[in-house]
Image 1 (cartoon, rainbow, N blue to C red):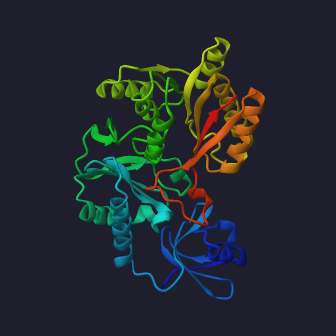
Image 2: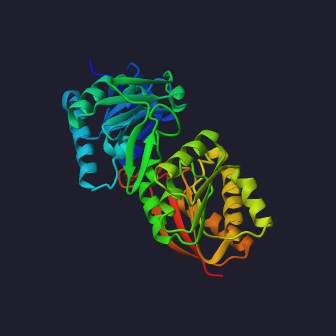
Length: 387
């Protein structure tokens, strides 16, 4: 018998408006097991579509389709093949990229990143976790991967009642995988660190930053050196800071491996360091701010706004006239309009006149699903100080 979940009028309208999530508050009744593919109906039995059911999360339903029947024997393969084929069509100048971006590829809760001939998968909901063996089998056939590691160590899995673990689920995965991003070479640990190894969503912004960089540069939240390493080719010197000792060590290794002697990596708290450099009267011609997500939920937004304003204010005071500030936010709850307002306030307090040169977002292999604002999580503004 087909599992059925009935949703409220508000839930139905949300789906019809293009958002693939239905929250638990909008579930009227459910006859389904954890991770089931269920038929979704309105309160009068009107068919709405098909979705993956979660028995514990506030996100109760993740929509798979809104028309017709869903054949699980074919739909997952078709969507994985389509997602992988799309990335191949982009002409990405890197051997690491995102192959599957969850709901944006019609594969709710599934993330797949390629690092050379290895893959990293993440299952973020009960439905994706239950089907992980199926996904892995298809991925091996479609990509020819020699090894796949499941990085299911994300805290979000707790909301789904799922265990956190890191394990190799196919083949062999070396301790370090060698990949390239444009001219830069990285040795990536796929079992540890942030995200799945690298911040692949910033790849195209790293490239863009190099078009604006010059003189003395600063990458204040460098992680493993993404922006700093690309800026090194066009800048006289690059200061790269991070509060994580392991990230600093990795950034230093990458700078050395790429022969970039003008990159100086230091372990430092960017908030404190920015204030100290301002007091010392130092100046930079290019500054990049790419901090971790300050707002992981709506309740954290006020504090996040204060944090973003503080670092942008200090950066603008350190920026030379004619210099560029590349400032980013990966907080989904801080939208582009709010980030622009924060920068405007910071510029006013810094008594700096700035122009907006470019508005950017995550790389094209991390597509935004129209109707789902959560998928437009990364914002990147390129600003120029003119006075």
